Image 1 (tube, rainbow, N blue to C red):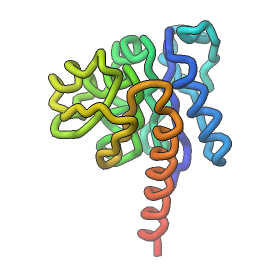
Image 2 (cartoon, rainbow, N blue to C red):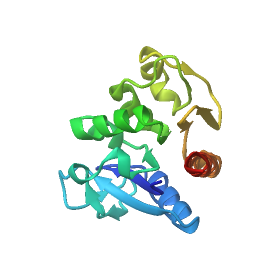
Image 3 (cartoon, rainbow, N blue to C red):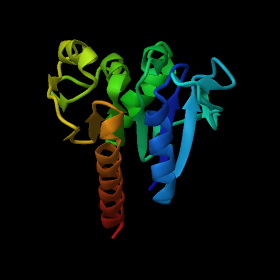
Image 4 (cartoon, one colour):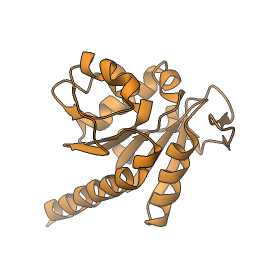
Length: 180
């Protein structure tokens, strides 16, 4: 069972929504890779903090991941312009991998077409986008719907990361149970 977490990055990402999960998941002992579109060698967050991705989307497969994280900021609007990013989210969903999206990260989920009939949250400004993509939108700190974990804003990061870690742990345990 893969225990690798991909954090997707592009220009104008929300700094805390990238770095908090990366550091928290590494602290929990998971292998975390930042994945860029390949449009630039490095990206700056909205607050100006840079990240040089560990790899690019053309080298990442859903089968190698336990989870994919879609941070907010303006980055999701750029991420969804890359078919490979959209396909990675679709593939992760089809394989029941954990998908975490916070703030404007829901834009990528909308473009991937995975929200129909699901309950989610996001930053309030994209509520209509999520609803128009078929989701039931609620204003809560964190929402878990199957393999999907969503949150609204940086203040929600502790609850967001806690639920993602719980889902990854549950998935790993389930896979190990299937081996016996």
